[in-house]
Amino acid sequence: MSTLSYNLPPKNRFRVAIGNNPPDAFDRCNGGFPRMKPTVSCPYIGFTLEVIKMLTDWSHFYLEPVVIKSDEGQVNWHGVTKVLELPSTSKLVSCQHCNAEGVAHCFHCRGFGTDKCGYCRGTGMKAGVAHPALYTHPMVGTFPNTDMSRGYPGAGSAIVRPPNFSGNKPYAVGTPVHFMAKAGLPPPGIGHHDLCLFCQGRGIKDCHHCKGQGKKTCSSCGGHGSVRQYTKLKVFFAVERSDYFTHSEVPEILLAQASGEVSLMETQSYLMPIKKFPVNEINEVSKKLLAQHMQKSLGACRVIKQRQTVEAIPVAKVHWKLGKKSGIFYVFGTEKLCYIPKSPTKCSIM
Image 1 (cartoon, helix red, strand yellow):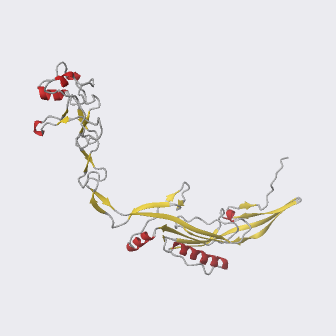
Image 2 (cartoon, rainbow, N blue to C red):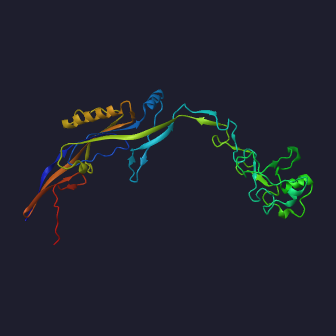
Image 3 (cartoon, helix red, strand yellow):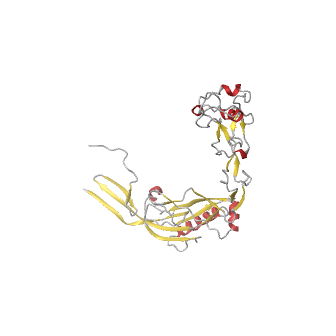
């Protein structure tokens, strides 16, 4: 015959939890035995000393905390960082990259706006080989050669630029267009089908970086000639929290997984210690933890909110007897969690 007896009513156990938590991000303080747990939590923003001084000058400036929700919908305040613009620090200044012109020098074509045609290798011929009449004609007598003013060998061809009023496009030296400009007729034995399809016998093409302009839009100011200058403020949101458990035979790691009845919950910008709680231990711990949190945040951060909670969790100690065996275990929390102090290390299967 087996007997099972309960020691009722269950005793109460208390836990004090104090931490820097925002009001929305306050986690319920879970404990083990029926306990009362005062919890003080305050979310704060960590700054350097210089940032704190700037914020005192801008007393009207309020930093809204960033809320990051997990998959379960709970708010996570650990390690949240936000970059903000400090008010009244924004101003327009001239772009130093383009000297407020809005355009920058094209270094690919060195400001010429043209580049050697890569399909005909600067010869103007579809075959990529210079026509013999170009270097044998007495009025031309030249090969397609490289412009030595370019940044590196082979970067471009020597170019002839007709006057602007003539309406003619520039062309490279030693090309069919150069021959026609000098001799007044095309090179003998070739037609339009022999010319390069991309440069039409000129041996050069427009630079694809600047579209033949020699200058391109400034990447720093986007062509406006001015940039906006302001002071960035990096804000760190963090949570400072402390928990305290009254003496209990159930480990604190298990008490943190249980929930109970909230006896006291208070949320203010700055809290006062608990003074009239029936359990004097709770009053002393509340005063101690609040002082520790105030000392940590003084001169180093700004406290947004503080929350203090006292929670009572029921715990029942159960004595059991089955045949010649007997023992105890604990049932705690509103979830009726079970804790067995000494569980058997071996088992046998019949």
